[in-house]
Length: 396
Image (tube, rainbow, N blue to C red):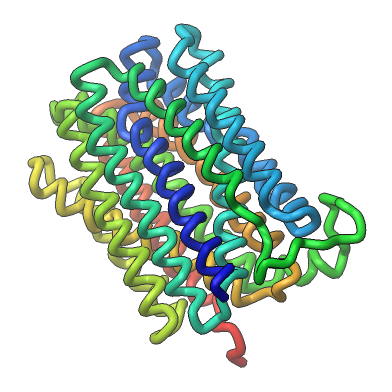
């Protein structure tokens, strides 16, 4: 157990550094592409999607490979890709090189987040898993909060390119930290007869049970909202239509992250007590209200409150669904199940920015922005209905 606690704290530290790096870029990326490369909104959407382009296809193989050889080697390789991707973003003046760099960065982060969720879930028994994963992800979000807050100031004072250089330095620090992870539960090395990334038919049947599939579809819809609407459309709408400065928009995103921290903690803690389905439904209701609020409020402080609610929504979803899936499959295939979950999440990150930016272009600004928020409300409503497809582990 002492070994598990050591590994848990190492995962928290490396996860926080990884999210700190991501926070430096997330609020400023779409406006950066829009202004630095004079890109139309659809190309901005493609640039945002670049982060998820190959990440979507690497999550599941990484999960399967980690089942065979352990998590340490994929973690180290992923941090190397993130460092290279961040540095190319800092250097390049070519939009396609920027997209390529974000592809590399996304693959690197896929390795960490897929393995991180799975590894933490295996360090604790089911009755403590929700709290452990909720706290792990909440502390990660604190790193993201710091990155977003400081990143907005850095971008405003030194230019947004500097943010990518900071990310490269943080990536090197994270790379050094992941080398300290032993990558085994209980101090024993992971043993497997033969490395393979191809799961058996029985494993696929176990992974793709009704609970996992329904949870993945819900996560897909929520990620379309998070990456497409709130990560691509909202920053352009806020900075261009509402006249919010870049550093003040970073503060709005920080408010969202504070909500995400609260959502992860509450979702993980309460889902162990009142049930994961109830907590997931509550989080989706909060998200529906928050996204609708974006069509009503334009002032900074009302928007801050709405963004805080949006953060609670995403924190609950991001914290509860992995624990739900981890409970729904045998321990031996948990990495594959988490890999499946993250593949659907990345699919939402890939198609969300493209779909939402295309939708806004077709409708036309500024009306397209408002209608895209209504579309987001509809997606969350469908996800809420999908919660009824989920069953608590062990229920009839």
